[in-house]
Structure formats: structure tokens, C-alpha cells
Image 1: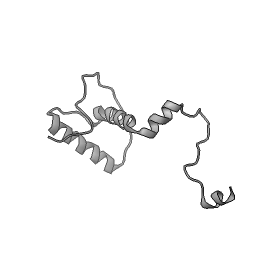
Image 2: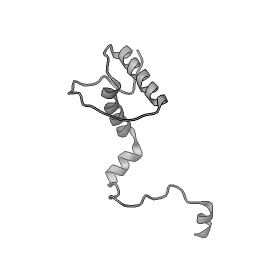
Image 3: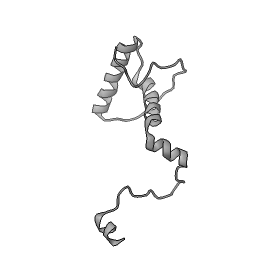
Amino acid sequence: MPNLKLGKLPDRTPSKITITVSAGLSQALNDYAALYRQTYGESETVAELVPFMLSEFLESDRAFAKARKEGLPGVGASEKPRRQSAARLDDT
């Protein structure tokens, strides 16, 4: 049995989600749902899996966790550039 990153979903009240994704992502999500069904013997729709997949993704993102811990920048605050250009580095 595969060891999926996403564990078996807990009992819950289903919620509706509406998003637009590329054809490739749609196929990948359908493939994941099929593997989930094969792994756990229970069929879940992509719409039921996606919120849990997003939650797992956010919980495993160290940079996001650090930013939340440090306090996210306020609305309208400009983002810090990730890299400075070589010319800019030479000016300092």
C-alpha cells in the first residue's frame, strides 16, 4: 500500500469548492483521487480532497509557518525582494 502524504480523511461535513485549474492539474487531481480510493478503499471527490491537500501543503511549508509566526505583513505592505540585482549589490 502506498504511503501517501495525505492520510485518510476524518469524518466531516462536506463543503463545496469551486476553482478553475489547468487540464494537467485536473488530471493530476483525478489521478490522486483514484490512488486515494485504491489506498484507502473509499472514494472521495477531488472537491473533498483539495481542502485537506491545501491544509497539508500549508502546514508543511516552513517559510509560510515562519512568516505566520513572525506576523504576516499588513494589507498593502510591499513585499521584500527575494534577491538584489548584481548592480545593486555593487552599489552598497
